Every structure is written in C-alpha cells, then in structure tokens.
Amino acid sequence: MSNSTSLCGVCGLRHLSKPSTVWCLDCDEGLCFDCKEHHSLLKATKSHNIISINEYQKLPRNVLEITQYCTKHEEIFQIFCKKHDCPCCRKCIIETHNNCIDLIEIEDYIKDVKSSARLSDLEDILNETTENVKKICINKQENLTSLQEVRKKIENEIVQTRIKINNHLDKLQADLIQELYAKEANESKKILQVLKLLEEKEAQLKECQNNFVHIKKYASDVQLFLSMKQIENDTVKDEEFVQSLMENGRIFQVILYLKDIIDTKNIAVDIPYIGKVGVDYSPSLVSITKNKEKQAQMMATKTTIKSIKNIALKVQKKITACGSGSTGCTQLSHGNIAFANEKERNITVVKSDGSLDFKIDLKPYRPLDITYIPYTNTIVVTSRSSNDIKIVDVNARGVLKTYCLDAPCAGIAYTEKRIILCSTNEGILELNQHDGSVKTIVPDKLHDYAHVALLGDQIFYTNSLTKSVICCDLLGRKQWVFQYPKLSRLFGVAVDIDGHVFVAGNSSHNVVVISPDGKQQKQLLSSKDGVDWPNGLIYDRHKNQLLVTNYDKGAVLYNVTLVD
Picture 1 (spheres, one colour):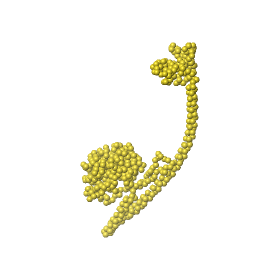
Picture 2 (cartoon, helix red, strand yellow):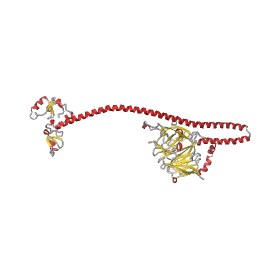
Picture 3 (cartoon, rainbow, N blue to C red):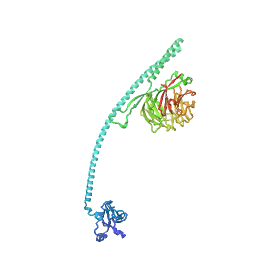
Picture 4 (cartoon, rainbow, N blue to C red):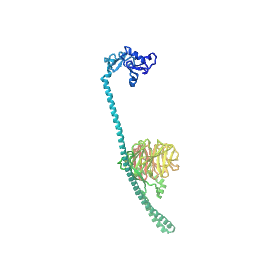
C-alpha cells in the first residue's frame, strides 16, 4: 500500500505529485486519471478491481492498514498456507513453508469470497451481535430507570428508619437522664443524712467546748476532775462515731459516671439502651488527723526500729490474670488492681478476686508505671520510651489527655492532689494535672526503671544508677540515703503507714524492707519464695497487704504480719 492514498503511486515513482482518483485493490495503490487509463489497457492489469478513491477512503482504518506485500521480503503475497493460516510470498514459501502441504494460491483461495457462505455467515453474526448489543442497551436503560425508582424507595425507607431511630433514642435519652437524676437524688439523700448527723455532732462538740471553758474557770477541783472523766468518755464515743463513718464508707466520695456505653458504630433500631449510669465510690479526700496518730508518728522511729525484725509476709493469693510483662501497678476502687503491661502495651484491670476484668489498649505506647486518681476515676501512665504522660479514663477505657514532657518518665505516684514523677534526665518532678506544667523537686539523673512512693510530705524513690533508695521531703531536701549490697537493680518501692519502705530488687530477685530512718533492713522475699524479676509494688495501708508484681510470673498479694 502507498504511503498516501491521495497521491498517484505510479507518478510518485517518476518523482511527480499527482492526485489519485481511483484505487487498485490488486496493486494496492492509488492512480491518477492518466495512469488509470494506461492501467486499464495493459493486458496484465486490465482485469484488476478498481474503485474510486472516495469509496476506498470509506474503508475502516484497520482495513486500510492491511497490505498485500510481505513486510519481511517486500514481495506480493501469492500463496495462502492453510496449516499456519497466513499469506506467503515466494520467499516465505522457500524459507518457512517448504514442508507445508496445504498451500493454495491466494487468487483461488479468495475466489468468489464476496458470494461465499462464510461471508454470509459472518454478516449474520455481525447482525446478530448488533442486535444482542441493542437488546442489552435497552435492558440496561430499563435497569437504570428501575435503579432510580428503587433508590427513591430505599431512600424513603432510610428516612423512615432514621425517624424511628430518633424516636427510640429520644426515649432512651429520657430514660437515661431520669435514671441519672434518680441516682443523684438517692446519693444526695445519703449525703444529707450524714451531714445532718455531722451537724448534730458538731453542735454537741461546740456546746461541750463552751461548757469546758466555764468548768475550767469556775468549777472546783473535784468538779473539774469528775467533769474531765465524763468528757473523756464522751470524746471516745465521738472518735468512735467518726471512725464508724470511715469504716462503713459513709464519707466516701460519691462519683457518678456513665458505663456500658454502646458502640456507636453498630447502632440499630432495636438497641436496648444508650448506656447506664453507675455509681462508684472512692476513699474520701478528707484527711482525718488524730492526736494519737500524731503521737504514734512522733514515736515511729523508736518503735519501728525495734519491730522491723518482726515483719513477715504470708501469701494471700496469686494473680495470674495480669499476664506477662507487668512493670507497674496501682489500686483502684472496690479492691480492683490495674497493671501497666509493657510487653502487651496495655493496662490490665484485675478484679478483687484476682480474675480479669478488662484491658485498655494503648498501642503503640508502652506503659511503664501507673497511678490512680480516685475523684476523677482516671489513671496516669508513664513510658520509658516516650516523653508523653497519658491520662486514661477508666470508665471510657481510653486516653483522655496527653502531656508531652521534655524527657521520658519512669515511676509515678499520687497523693493529696500531687502527681510525682521520676524523670530519667531531670530527676523528681511534680506534674500539675490541670495545665500540664512541671516543677522540679530533686534535680538528678535517674535509672529508666526508677519508681516512687509517697507518705505525707515524704518522697521515697529508687535509683539503680547509684544503687540506692532516697528519702526526701516535698522541697527536695534529702533525709536519708539507703544502700544494700544484696539489692540489685532497685525498681519498685512502697511504704506503709509507719514509714517502713519496701523495695524490689529486680535482678537480685528479692524484696527488702527498710526502717523509717533508713538505717536497718530485712530481706522478706527471695527467689526461693518464687520472686522472679520483681517490678512494681503496692502497699494497701487499710488492709496491711503488699502486692509484688513479677515481670514474667504475674503478681502475688501478701498479708503483712508481725512475728515474735
């Protein structure tokens, strides 16, 4: 085929540019008017099929690109090989089709092709396919129309379903708020009853104080002596009254919270509720000070030095539900315990009976130590691989807030609205939970597993870099430093009401108790007792119990006893 159908191929060989008027299908080239005349007179070409150039240009592009010449040898196709189903030139037959037996001249093979049954069948197939495509188009148009109609119907159903959901949620909301008000009213009633008792008791005490002033001033010695005895008896009853309020939980802080919150990702019309209102109780924030306790604290050093050798531990129960990898722990309400699991990267909460309650996933954050803030029902979490301090909501079971510090922190403790941290690079810090600001108490370089415990205005922390336990006050003034060769990698630390300090030796696999003045010690547990890589410690000052967390073997709760 010529490079251009618009120019005469014969004239092009003579370097002339004349427009073609016809196309020779046999020669596969265009001819001008003069060349067409010569072409029709020559004996070799007078039988060739010639059509006008306009008709030829109506052929599809892929047909126009079909050539009658072999692209390899540039010779015209003469033979058709049935075996390979391809046309061949003279050289092709010699080179690649010499052994083929189904060879036929193209002229004979295509003879009467336009009137052949094959062409008729092909035309029928094209017509049939065209008809099928048309049917499919009609069907898809009908489908498109029906799709729009069904969409409108479903849209209406969705709207109606949403109305039902809204009505249902409105009812659940009203029921939940009603329950909230009822719970508040019930708890308020209890508090008012306690307030009434306290007001009556306060009036009695004021009257007693006023009477006591007059008795001291005007009564005789005999009258004063006998009155003092009566007042002492009344005072004992008053102390018992206050103590009874503490023991029966009537002065506990009452906390309302929302529990069993539904998963909003799976809301359905038949959801039974939005959530439930629960009531939680935590120890009172009121610090009850007794004169006898003050005297006991003043005498603590003398008495405890003598009795430290009598302290012993007895297994109360083993806790395996905390899993492997726990590094810190804290007490929650109702006797529950929360563990910081560095390996699983979560907080594991265990019930008072030792069974698993729930887990709070913190991935990719790796918690090291935790402490509980009762009145907010939150847990503060540290990590030795992150500068972030996370506040976790126990009820919602998720991170409530994050503070970013200048360096990672290890141990953490809370008391009297103070959050104390062990910063690996900056020392002992106090974190303001309201604005996230930090105050340095003791500038120091600490081990990345340093732990801390608090008692009143005293801070007790471990530092494996110096192999010591340090006691200081809230102003950072050191009171004593304890070192003991049998303690290696000092991690967890806890303190009882009398100032005894319990320390976990992680790589020495033991637990040691230190006297309140930091001068005496006693090993309470060792690897022979099952202690294995101990980390966090908790001391329950109400029940006199010590919890020891082992990294790989769960935790063990011990009763602290005195032996002769």
